[in-house]
Amino acid sequence: MKIVFATSNPHKLKELNEITASYGVKDIEFILPPKDFDPLEDGKTFEENSLIKAREASKLTGMISLADDSGLCVECLNGAPGIYSARYAPTPQARIDKLLAAVAPYKNRKAKFVCAMTLTNSDGSILFADRGECFGEIAHKQAGTGGFGYDPVFLVDGKDGLTMAELSEDEKNEVSHRGRALRKVLDFLASQNS
Image: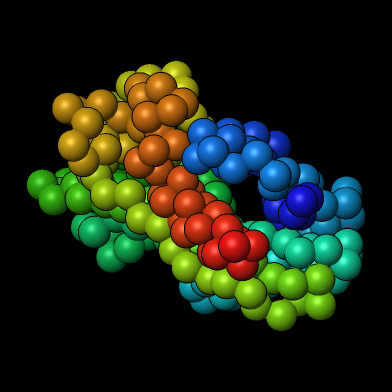
């Protein structure tokens, strides 16, 4: 079964298919939407933006589509960068630098990665929606070369002071917000086929 994953980010697509395979699901493959996929993400929450993307992908392809909207929420910044995580600064390194400067004055560096996922039918109606979260805190400096985005400055709870970027792919997929949300989607899909 092919499901359109409503993103233009090949990193996310690769991660999704890896998590799906590691979860033992062999009959689902996520594919990218057409090149002209470019929805206006004007929602006020992760869930709203996820639904906008899933519906747009279903409309373009006439297929079941899955979308995620994810970001980093930092307690001392009142949940920022939140839904603006990818637009917090112009480049990945600039986003990390801006974040480290913003949290520098605070002792409380608690943060969480959030991923809201929405699965829509070929007509754009919602089949399933849920979210996954991964808790941790913002490191004082970057560490690790794996992952992308804010992974090098996100210390994962319960991982002995390692950042998300220092975990192996398997470890990351096990604890990540996207992995947790996706497993809920896969469980839903399995329940429909049983």
